[in-house]
Amino acid sequence: MTILHRIAILISLTLISAGPLIAQNTRSQEERIARLQKEIDMINVQLKDNAARSSSALSSLALVRRKISNRRALIAESDRKIEAIDRNIKEKNKEIDIIRARMDTLTLYYERLVRSAYKNRDTRVWYMYILASDNVGQAFRRFGYLRSLSTRMNEQARKIEKTREELEAETEKLMVMRKEAEAVRAQRQKDIDSLKSEENQSQTVVNQLNRDKKKYQAELRKKNQQVEALNREIREIIRKANKSSSTKTSKGGKTTSTAVDTKLSSEFAANKGKLPWPVEGTVVETFGQHYHPVFTNVKLPFNNGVTIAVKPGTEAKAVFDGTVRQVVVMPGYNQCVLIQHGKYFTFYCKLRSVKVKAGDKVSIGQPLGTVDTISSDTQLHFQLWLENTPQNPSLWLK
Image (cartoon, rainbow, N blue to C red; front, top):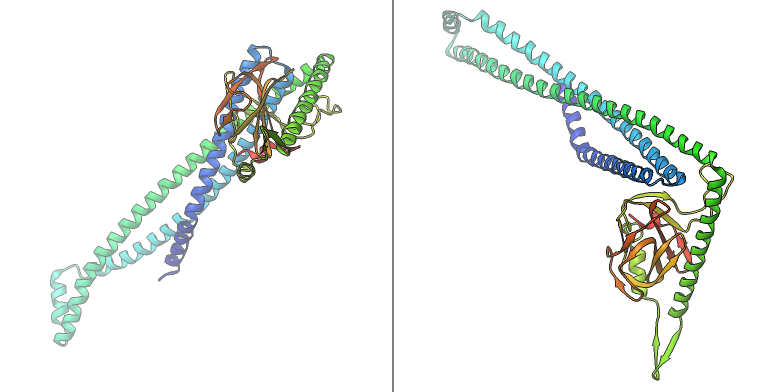
């Protein structure tokens, strides 16, 4: 076995073993790109809808900045994809070089066979060569040599043809890779151009906010009051729910317990990171402590949940089985559905119409109501609590 054959076998084995992993990584990358592009398309629809309804600049800024974040992620994915294609092209060039070297070796050997056959091209020379043998054994050996020469020539010609076909196939694959690289690079440039446009759009909104600073600061104070009122209301509801779950009541001479459903609590906890999102949309406000995106010295109220921008008419759905604890109306949040899942609670706020009432048993994925449009924004505010402690929904939702 020549060194070229050994190298070829080694490369083939490497590609075979890496094949499933490469395919898996490619699928994962394509899924990420599809998700990012889908969210960008959704944000464009929301921005267009907001503009038609003279939406607040702050909401538009959140959407634009989210789109910019996704666009940068798309460019990063393109960079990774281009690097992977370039690596594949480099490996493919190595394979082609090996095949060409094998082709040269086969051709050289074939030329030697042809020259040998040419020397013995006259049939009479063949016969004289055999008849000139010293004995019968030598005659048979000479006859076998001449016959095998013809056979080897035919075999070598077939090998050359097969290698030539292999070379053409690999060259075609290389051309496909290069075209793919060109397409990815072109898309990357489009994303870069879009990113520049979106950054300019973001700066325009920031300038608008700065021009109307007093107006937006007044709106911010009002919003802060609404957030604090909602947080107080939620804590009070949970406190009452926990209190009722830890007491026993006597009715008609019988004692009944309203203990927390520990089985449901365990099932809910076991699904951390796998719960479905209550709506499909774009997260514009994340969990935790944040500062104003423009007036950076202004601290915003602690966000106990996430706010998700959605298309008008979107229905909010339960993220897990549970019992509707209460339906309340809050300024700035319209109707809120509060569901208990054992020790866990989920809250769905900013609903226009509600399809459930207190005491109803709900199942995962069940529609609870339609998201309302408040102050020109169609958004769902979602919270998740473990007893008296708010949780980061992003860690629980898949």
